[in-house]
Image 1 (cartoon, one colour):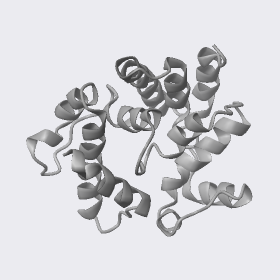
Image 2 (cartoon, one colour; image 1 turned 30 degrees about the horizontal axis):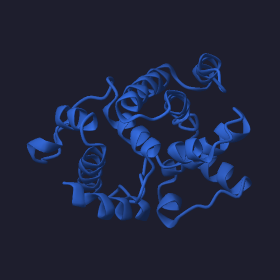
Image 3 (spheres, helix red, strand yellow; image 1 turned 90 degrees about the vertical axis):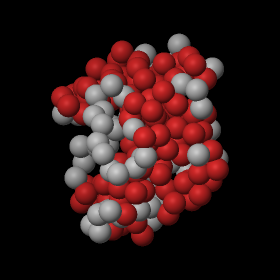
Length: 198
């Protein structure tokens, strides 16, 4: 193994609040389970899973400052809703602090919140694992029964593209229902690409 996931996990536990660290552990194990099913490197899935929220404790001003300082591009939606930047900031931290050099792992961290069109299998695994990990609770946003968390969890182990599409549809419907929420253009483009799998 190139990376010691136990050492990374221990370091992450010191950066995140307990609740978020437990979530990250859940994403790591869920990602590894999906990786076994979909024939992706368990190590890559584990590393991306444990590090996906490594920048999540930064507040919005910190995220904006951090991204500006390190020349990380900021979209109009990210400027309006800086919490969206934690994926990009997290990928930078993963590279600089944890020595993660593989771009496909960094991209899985970078796009775990917004998704994107034509995601790699690892990107899809982290995107889905973040949504379905065991600590996630069901909520009703008025969608049909195929959008329940139970249904999405089941779909993740049979059709990852459909699981992505269901999550994207559910998320966009939720964001549209709240005028204070912003929808990143990357998420819209991702949904336009994946909705054919519904």
